Length: 81
Image (tube, rainbow, N blue to C red; front, top):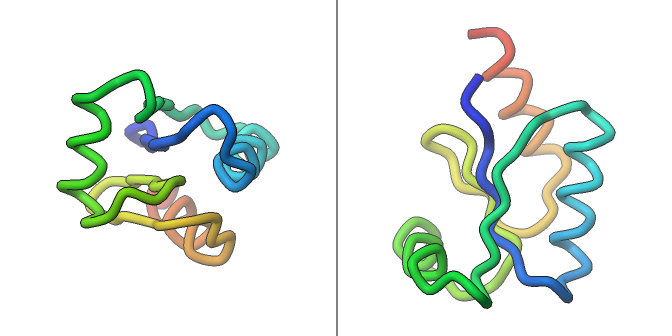
């Protein structure tokens, strides 16, 4: 399974929730801080069409915010492949 990418900011509570949830599930992820990384910020806007965080990319899917149900579904799909 390719690593999910989480676009975050340092002060975002929901970003911390997504990262904590992935750690609980033992899912390795890549974090991109859109405050300090302009390229990551541009990627996030291109993929999600918005400036809000967190944005999580799992394969072709983009999840905005901390949507546990959608994250679970996408993680299960990726583990089955």
